[in-house]
Image (tube, rainbow, N blue to C red; front, side, top):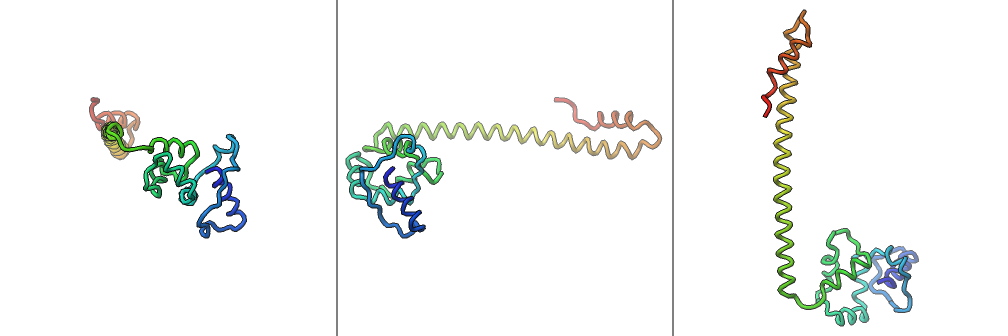
Length: 175
C-alpha cells in the first residue's frame, strides 16, 4: 500500500486526473520508511486499485481474507472517515482473517448490548436534562410575568419592594 500510495499520487500529480487510473504497476522494491507510513491516507479509490493487483490478491488469499474484497474498505473504515491509515488497515485485515467463529458472534452480541445500554443511559440523561430545561423555562416565564406585572401596578411606590414581593409569589415553591 505504501508503494501504491506513492505511484497513485505521483500519477495524479503528472496527469492531474484520478478517474483515468484503472490499475497500478506496483513493485515491492520501493518501501517508505516508518516515519512516512503514518502520513499515508488510503482512499477507497486507491484501495480498490491496489486489491486488483494479482500479487496483492495472492497475499490476501495467503492471509485467508474473505473473497468479498471490494467491500473490505467499508468494513475496515469503521469510523467512516473515508480514509484508512496503514495501522488501521493492518489491524482491520488481521481481525477479518479466517473463518467466522462462535466467539466472533458473541463479541458482536456483547458489543451491541453495551451500545444499547449506553444509548439507554444517554436517553435517561436527555430526559432529565429536558425536565430541568422545562423547569427553567417555567421559572423564566414566571419572572417575566412578575416583572411585567410588577412595574404596572407600582406607580409612586418603591418598585424594589413590590417587585420582590411579587417575584416571590410568582415563583414555584422549592422542590
